[in-house]
Amino acid sequence: MRIKVLLECIKVQNKKRYIEYVKNFDYKRALAEDPLTKRDKFQNNEDPFVTNIDNITSYRDFHKQITNKYKLSNIATDNSDFEKVLQILNWLKEHTFYNGAQIIPICDNTLDILNYSFDKPFKNAINCRLKAIAFADCLVAVGIKAYPVCMISTKFKSCHFTCQAYISELDKWCVFDPSFGCWFSNSNGTPIDIFEMRELFLKNIEPTVNGYNFNGTNECFDVYVNSFLKLCISNLTTWQDNSTDRRTKRKLSKKKEFKSKIPN
Image (cartoon, rainbow, N blue to C red; front, side, top):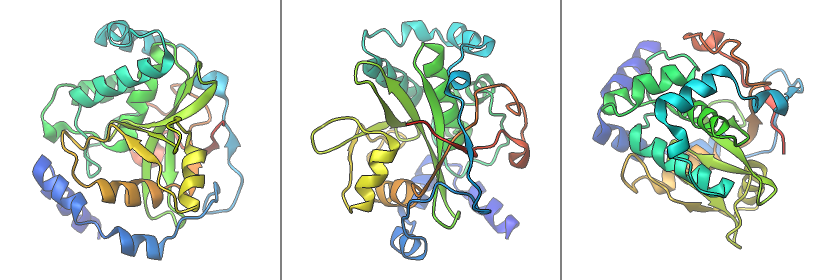
């Protein structure tokens, strides 16, 4: 089975092939087998740790290095937090590709992630975990509270990573997806957080997806909403803190774990 998965991943290291690969995903069957619930638990049904938001938003040495190397102060120039987040979101979208089938083992360190993917061809595309980590770190580096979010389906068969950022002028957390360069709002146009988005899906209401961009195209939108979001939003987790602990591991089983409650 592992060999089959690896071969499938190798086939989609071309942008056009990857888009076709996503387009053909049978999300109706996946949702029928793994319907949306509201759990926020793990396989062993234990409550996750509580996230230490103070540690997640600490300004560390590697954040300074990211700011200096990529001149983030010249990217996030707006006065509002929301617009700053969008500036970083668009910057990351323009300079990195997304590939959910990426199999190259990369550390959770944003400097390593961007060194591998920044302004590189599609064969250097990064997956949603790496996109969310890099995005969150870049936001923290410019003074915005943020953390990556792991969204996992009810039966733990599927997952997708997004990011929460605290928007001070709105006095709330809002969810952004750096893999698809988008953010979400309710029927009033108000940006929503990850919990609000899940509540909408539970009521069979789709949030408004703003700025959707799939590697420079608007293809696969229905698949995105139903499989990347709706299918995966049952369990919501993040890191316990933003320390460098386990950030340098390449093996997935040894990387920093997403097993904590996310603040709201």
